Amino acid sequence: MGDQCALSSANDSNSGPPVAVPALRWEELPEGPVLILLDQTRLPAAEVELVCTDVQTLVGAIRSLAVRGAPVLGLAGAYGVALAAARGFDVDDAAGLLAQARPTAVNLGYGVRRAVSAHRRALASGADAEQAAAAALAEARALHAEDAEASTRMARHGLGLLEKLSPGGGYRVLTHCNTGALVSGGEGTALAVALAAHRGGLLRRLWVDETRPLLQGARLTAYEAARAGMAYTVLADNAAGSLFAAGEVDAVLIGADRIAADGSTANKVGSYPLAVLAHYHHVPFIVVAPTTTIDLDTPDGASIDIEQRPGHEVTEISFPQAPVSEAGGGMLVTPLGAQAYNPAFDVTPPELITAVVTENGVASPVSAASLAALSPPCGPG
Ligand code: MRU
Image (cartoon, rainbow, N blue to C red):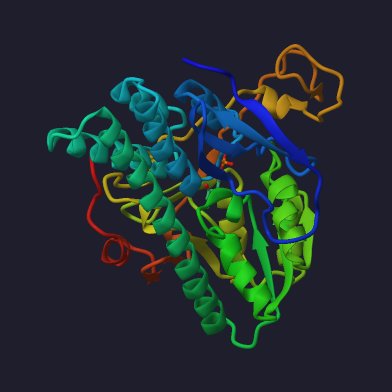
């Protein structure tokens, strides 16, 4: 189906705006349109772009987490459909491959359906293949702009909630995984709220869970926090309990991959234990997510499909220059053949969530009714 992703540029940088290179962008090259991704597997050591000329390459990039995080997966899905249409591939085949690349983040399928619907509508109204491809691209761009706008509004609502819960600022915020500009058309979800607090002089410390096994916190959130000049500290995930016990956490801010109709929230594995800790220590546990992450068709947490990832992500640690083992290419840290349990996400029940912050406002207490009131009816497909 075309070339493998090619490396197009690289630089090393640790200061400046939150992210130097956008998580993804569309470009019209002389040889045809391409979707360019910032390869998040290479951060923070290097900012390397992957050029996707076909959907199979993009699917590989989604599976390897070169592009990751719920909102931007929606954008990747929509642009992927546009790429298939523009390059003359079968759009339905491409949509199927993209939507199934990862199961948990509801945004991926949503983005795919938006672009496919636009493509179909164009064809049904008499457009030729080129015009239909342009319609799919326009829809991807519209979703991109909506996501950026949602990010700005979530930051405003989230900061308002922090100020209401704990007037006066000086916030010590704990976050998990990565929820900044790397996952968004804008500045992200939970990290966008922390960034707004930072810009307002209200953030005392950002506690960054390293987020084993793939270190999205240590590698990506710390990268974004450093570039933004935030006061941040990285901790091993299992150090969070002692921070709560010492009274060092004022709020937990996390994102979401899918919020079921009853408010059960799937997010990066390790979120649920943080919610239990926060509940025990009477600390607000706040989920920040666009309404595109609310899935009213999924009734509850048990109905959320949780991605299981390869065991080598747990049994090996990968460094770019490390000696290579046979399974995942990293350094083995377990006995050879050890079994691993590696769910990518866990589910936090609504009773442990203080509030869900969306671009349309705040649901608190979190319930089917409060979420439905913020969430527009189902989109296309
Ligand atoms: O496996 P990942 O890195 O795609 O997981 C991402 C997360 O769990 C994020 O917290 C979630 O997508 C919210 S991003 C705004």
